[in-house]
Image (tube, rainbow, N blue to C red):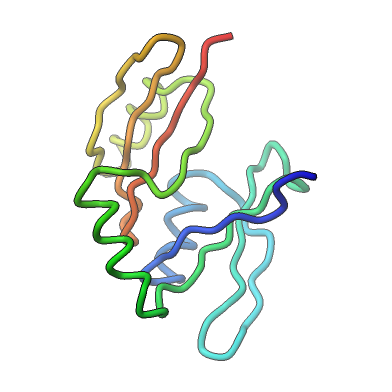
Length: 129
């Protein structure tokens, strides 16, 4: 068994698609109209057949209170592996990305947390081997 698709709830799929591709560097895998929304997934350019991230519309009534509570408590909705947290922090900061946690070393982990502009906090992480 392996993870095929996971999702984050986004306030605006168009805005999320741009942020996750143009800023974070993922590539669009699927973009299929589904009623007024879309089945919009992105993948890592390093693993185009790997796990997909579904940019899920936030329309369900339970979603907004859930997302609000996570953000208020500083809890990331997802965590993405990077090779160098400090380098990604600098690159993304240069693109105007707002971080709620600058790079922080915690034993073998280095993490930082960013605002995805679509209602979520996202953690980037590197684990030392």
